[in-house]
Image 1 (cartoon, rainbow, N blue to C red):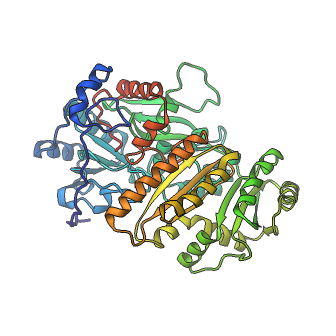
Image 2 (cartoon, helix red, strand yellow):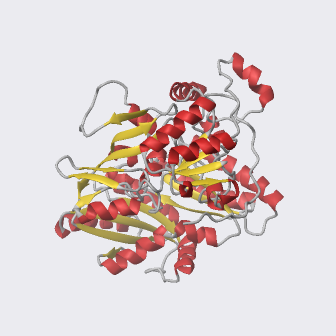
Image 3 (cartoon, rainbow, N blue to C red):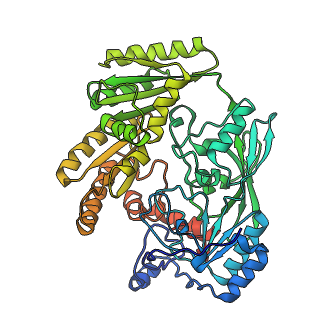
Length: 505
């Protein structure tokens, strides 16, 4: 395959990172002396790649078709799925092995060249964008399922394996990998790096709960292993869990051992219309308290459903309400599931639900969940541009947050559409640009975002439930955490990566 030259978009401009450990604050160089007095350490200036560096990297890879430089770097490598942050790397390496990554990392470390890990680029906060340019290492060719261990209930995969590929593979062998983020074309490495959650988190937990072991290339190029196939482990600090959710800032994931469960034999969903969204969301704590935990508890509104209908060209199964709960139940028999959902259905009707629609056929199941899976793209297609807020609040505060979002869009005169995982308090709010001028959009969007994150903080929530921090959320994270926590994070970063070459935006 021949490399194709592509036209580049304008390069994003940003402030230079001055500090080794300061992952969550971009500061001007003039402030560096003050921060030095507070105990931070000034990092070495990044080396800009030259022809000698490029030649050396090509010698490591030994396949020029997997090394993209300059104008041959596709535009997609300059941004993630949302596209709000844009910056080109100087070179892209499509790696095929841990050894290649190790050799590149050793070279980058020796010469203080920034490195950006990248999977499928489906993130929404700029984590896989090469803000400081340098080397981008693409892992999508490391996409092999290496081992299915049926005795230990584990599967070992490379980081470029797609979530949907993994799900299909293990289900063919009668196993189940529970983490279920909405973006099924994301890589497992990306899921681990952001500790992705998804719709099944309310019953099964998040990605962290299913990662048993990791092979990691450290910033200095050394290859090491954290964890393994043992079910429990109290042998020192859990370094594996530091890597999970670190967004590529501490090490480069090259292999993962994942926990599996036996595949549930039956799945049934309930679509439950309510007169108001408040009634729908207020019902969620009642469901959770019943101790009959659904696999998923999602909330949705008519306006978002209509966007999905238009996007998919297919009608939603029900039109009678402006607000819905979507529940999923799984188990090993129809009788087991029926007992569970009958109890929950009765509770919902007692809370004012208009009806309980049972999705007990494959066709109905697909139509409902396909609509739910299309929400993001549907909202994106309904406006000229959008920005996203992924926040998490205690489950009993979801309604407070949703009501606040409705009032805020009136206050700021800007459209906000939301949906989310009501069962675990994770909400996704999308701020829409529509016909606003660029200047007015920037002002209203920033003001709106500030208020949303402030409200989440007031409700004892956090700035990210599952999408990570990346570049976009650094200022909000800094405001949301005690300075002691940030200093500890900076200290951990310094131990793993003293030259700060693993920049995750």
